Image (cartoon, rainbow, N blue to C red; front, side):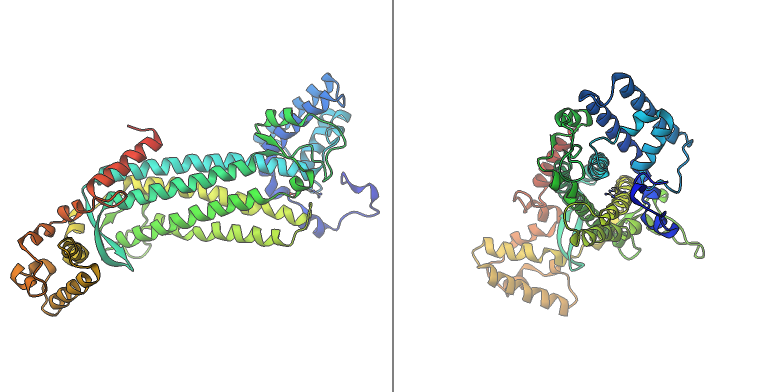
Length: 457
Ligand code: ARG
């Protein structure tokens, strides 16, 4: 028996039923569905569809269904097409005809999108909390590792020396932008659909403002056709999640390389690594590899749903039911990803001595070119001069800082004894005084900004 079978002469094919049913996955929305229905029951009471007694009966019945569901006592039927119909059936079984009146002036079209918006808003807020925690771990690292100088890389070739804290803080500020994208996604999600009906607006003049207030929505939708069709907030949400996932993947990639024996810059805590079933000596950075690998899902879930949406005209078509699984999967996985990365960062150790041994004096080449520029040489010329000096060093198996000043003078008479001041890593860092650069003060300032953002001392 279906709730809509009045006009049908025969039942659905079993395979059609299985194909059509969304209950196996949308039962995740039971709490949102019941919260939305309680607000709807209150609104119906105000316009006289329910007596006070019926309102209480319906709401108690709904609360009981949720409680029983949580206790594992609810049995769903094969004929329950989705969570909305399942809850309605259970309600009618519990409270009789009052339950049959709950769907007055409401359609599953505005109901499903209300539930999905409630769920998505909550999930976005939780992910935002997770990102705050991740930023906390990054800030902790930046403070702890202040003073460690690492080679900064481009093309995976050593490029210029930077403070490790500068590298960590890059992630902090990136996450600031992700959080603002999440903030925008929350704004797009935070709109009440109930009252939109199937597409034309409810046939009953319910007080939508008070439903919005009760459900915690900041505004009510202005157009019912727009609202029952609207899945833009899901595209936005899935795309922010894809962006967060991809960025976490990029940092994980760096750290995987840094944790290799060849680099040896960091070591993961045992609790966040795994071993090999065959090679007893192995300690693998599986946490980081999964952080990198899972980015595929986040991108995939976005692409999967945007592809579905592309062909769907207004207003509601069953294609839209395909929005839930990618959403649920991305939410579940991203919550874990953010937590795991936060712990991996907090617990890893930095192998400072090994890093220092690895710093290649050629990293100072740009600083030496800048030195000549400060003495008056145009940068293009200085680049050429230092290029020649580097070439000489490579040919003669010398490091850049081993050349006597006399030799340097052969390349430019602008070189003086003071060039040797550049030869300390710490001093090289000091020369970068520009705001936002890797200089000591700039990085301190970044850490202070980070503390302010997180509201910590
Ligand atoms: N299970 C459906 C979904 O998730 C609910 C809405 C059904 N609406 C309809 N007109 N058939 O999209």
